[in-house]
Figure 1: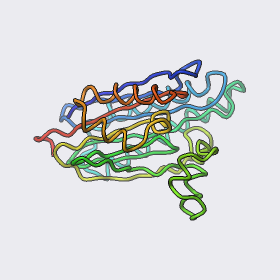
Figure 2 (figure 1 turned 30 degrees about the vertical axis):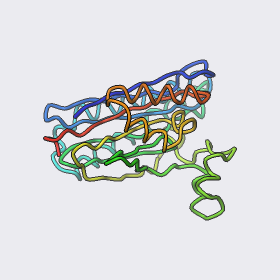
Figure 3 (figure 1 turned 90 degrees about the vertical axis):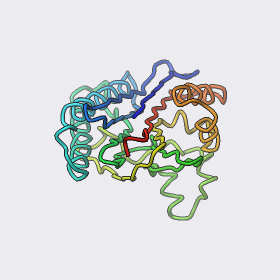
Amino acid sequence: MKIVGKTDIGKRRAENQDNYRAGRQPDDSVWAVVCDGMGGARGGAVASSISVSVMEDALAGELDAAGDPPAVRRLLEDAVQRANREVYELSSADPSKRGMGTTLVAVVLKNGLAQIVHAGDSRAYLYREGALQRLTRDHSMVQEMVEKGSLTPQEAEVHPNKNLITRAVGVNPLLPVEYGEQPLQEGDIFLLCSDGLTNFTSEEQLCEILEENDFFAAADAMIDAALEAGGQDNITAVLLKVEPTEV
């Protein structure tokens, strides 16, 4: 497995409230998590930092013992709930951080399977055989309008309220976590990213970047493309690649 990641503050923000972590286990399974914080008085940065740290502790420390896909799923979902609890308790105890939260998307590649959990509008994609497929569904008001048929996907991309999310880590005592999985194939590339990337680049652009760049240069190229298009938000991209012997 190969891993590469990059985050950038962007051109407009005073601080980077995105955070990411990724790691490789002794059995060569890999994991990654991306969080995009929200909230004033440094609350968003705190929420995303807590969440990636909780996920890292759980996955780096417990993934080896999770022998089959159901165990990995339980580990992922339990870790997200732990992160939610920590952020919510701090937000409730500290008035300056009231209302802080973070999106979260995480993936484990193990046992020939990608297992994904997410909350919010940070996304996971699969690049396979020249095509880019979105693996997650935004938890946002605009996405709900698309699903009800009142907006087209094209209208949703430019809607003024597209960043109003309906789920986030740390906002409520309990968090409904969405889970998905995808069998692995040789050469698969998984992209985890914050909306600072997807709001300023199209899926067609991201596909072209993956097609035209060396794997280890692709994350930099994605960040550069978002910056060139305005870069008005924090931007994060993490890529995982499946090698021939690891399917």
